[in-house]
Length: 248
Ligand SMILES: C[S@@+](CC[C@H](N)C(=O)[O-])C[C@H]1O[C@@H](n2cnc3c(N)ncnc32)[C@H](O)[C@@H]1O
Image 1 (cartoon, rainbow, N blue to C red):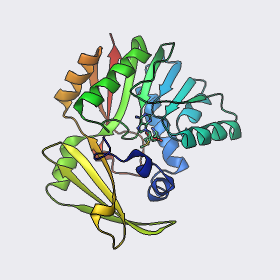
Image 2 (tube, protein in one colour):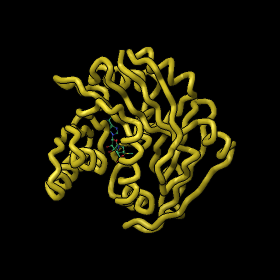
Image 3 (cartoon, rainbow, N blue to C red):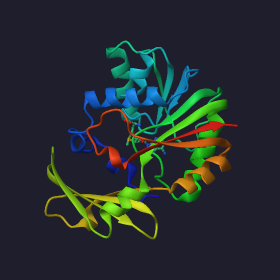
């Protein structure tokens, strides 16, 4: 897993600085708008997994959903709790792993937003869906916001896309490519001038629609549907895809 994704090194203060233009407060409002369009009207309880610093969990909670946010990072859970306090949100937060978290209750919806699925190999990813199924009540839904492999693969098509940003430690270069053998979007982040070997690797497995259906049905979901972005976004809407499925 570490070769594919150095989680501690990726999700740190640089992560926020690198995404500062995208992850604005307005973007979080847009994301909530998109989520509200997709959630069934009967939804009241939501598990936001992983929740990061609670930008979505706290907003949904203020809209009268009962929300629990889960994340492996104690630092980000502490920030989510502080954010909740500052905005008087009743959302609750727990430090835990997507794979092993076994709540004592079932939720109407389990939500995995902003390209937070597919960090492991196929076995690991399928086990995360099993965990999501375990946390969802029969008739409830799982909502996974991911990237659409088809336009991403076409766009990168054997080339490396580079972006330069300013972080606290100086200029940072992010190079993204698509690994056709592993079907993973790979991003290597390194200080400008440093070799890629010294960089931090993040990669996500992207699935074709057929594979999503297979994986979700294998985990105990049915009625799998795919949704293009409709709410506004600071990013490229064409690359975004949200997968919705109902727990049997
Ligand atoms: C891209 S961020 C998205 C957070 C949130 N969904 C959002 O939209 O802001 C991914 C998050 O996944 C968390 N994470 C990564 N692997 C995890 C795991 N195995 N269990 C729980 N959280 C994990 C990271 O700590 C990080 O907060």
